[in-house]
Length: 131
Image 1 (cartoon, one colour):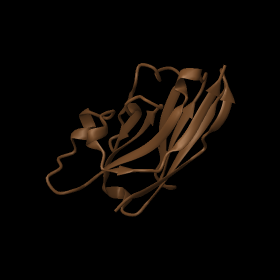
Image 2: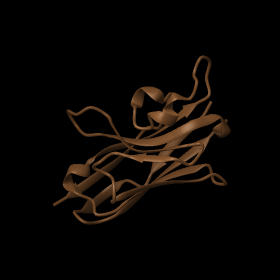
Image 3: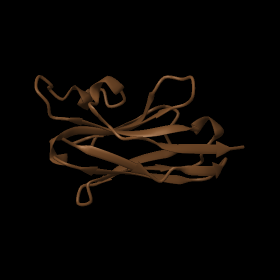
Image 4: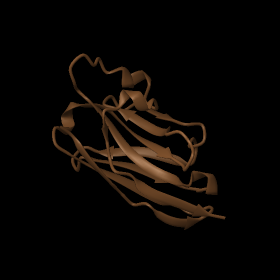
């Protein structure tokens, strides 16, 4: 089973940057997709950026042009570079993986930002952006 540990969150002013990291351990080669989600208080969890094992990426409209998802397979680490941060980016950020499992056909390839496609989640890292 894959385990995920996020790091890199913190407090920044509007316009600043942060890079989140997600260290994966376990049977990482079984992951079809990985993604970053966020959840602000009182709001639903939303997809921010995702990447599949083929290297295709997808971004939420709110993240396009500002955030970049990448992965270092040698280090089993997923990253989210966040630039031009805004107060509305304030949330708990979660790393997620969609790993091989019975009766799962890899639908996340075409639904990278859908939480239901992911079966492994990290504990989250808080990002706070002040104006």
